[in-house]
Length: 204
Image (cartoon, rainbow, N blue to C red; front, side, top):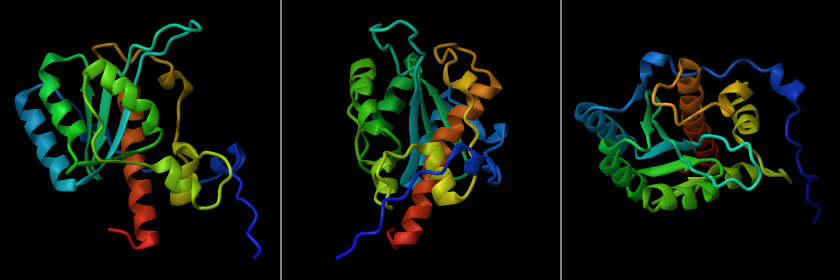
């Protein structure tokens, strides 16, 4: 039996030629601070069942320096993104309920690296979740596939990933619009990749 040759990830030039990813507008990106905001977010996430999920951490520029994140945790439905400062005392109950929930299924990339950080920083266990790195790799790729490549492969779109935002200070209590957009995109695009993969496979 002949196996097809492994597929190659798209090159930066191929990705650059794709149409842009239709990101959520800033008006649909919510930094959760009040009881009403947490209630709205929890209801939206529970109704969605499958939600985009990611975290961001303040970068360490010294070799061997301890990782102190995550500094923010992101969730997304198809319509909204919710940005949660991890250190905010008022966020603790919400984060525990949503992250540990097995009814709210978190989908994202590289979740294996998030698990120990969530346990160490927040004392929470990552509940039911789907690591999309493995799902996309099953399409025939020999290397691991990250979010940017997955958006190109599965959605045929170009996800903007700013290096400046990646290495910015995620512990800052006042995140910039660029940081909010970047964080929201990570969770929102993960969800859309999952939904497209599910539609292709006939899964719910």
